[in-house]
Image: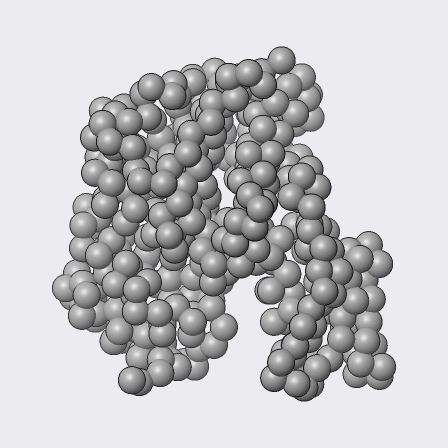
Length: 355
């Protein structure tokens, strides 16, 4: 079995499952280069390769649009988000959901006053949706580790300590990479007190990390996450935000230890829907591209629901906003999927939490 190590070898893996992808002749327009990390893992995962091909074949998009999607998938910057987009489309297709993709909307329709494209619209339902890769704490931490390892270049970096930090706090740690690299070179150990992290260099092939995580604290620290792209919320129709993830890139979220994943996701959705009540903070404080005349409270009411999908096992959680200006009723959901809910879907409408 050949190991995929370059962009062109990855393209060659993607072409057989999809004549549409093969017709793009991507090797002629995308420069070859070595790949590692996420793209390498993906390139050697035959199930995910077939999933992308299956999704691409069924999508009703122009060749130009598919080319852009594939270019994003092959790029280091946009890979994860585009993989999640393909995964959600594939899941919707397999569950008989009727939908259109890549819907252009104006600034009068969405919170981005310059307008933007929305990933999808459920046909005949007037429910828009947009797809995001769920780059939660575990994902951003691994990004941080990979960057630090490339700078230190002394083998594996272990990270001991809390695993329930806010994403924005970990992003702040990237500004300390240079100093941390110096400490690790000199002493083999460094600390980030505000994250409760201890970093160590290790040349052993077997490493063990000691970590702590509190699912309720994780949700509390990251309550703002659904509003980071509030610019795409629809002003006048029901809108669902779709977060996708897999064990490869969010291991902690995918191992539902003692129901921890259920707790994190429900708590995060509940805070997004209910904690924002009466909050006059301009939504542009959380998403600079969103209409600054709207408050966080007003923006939260434009979020009809949040759908989480683990695309490795098709487990999904749909949380409906009891404060939504345009609510998506629980009884209405099966109609989106041709009157048959997807296997493994849990729905919570917070019917007894809206107080």
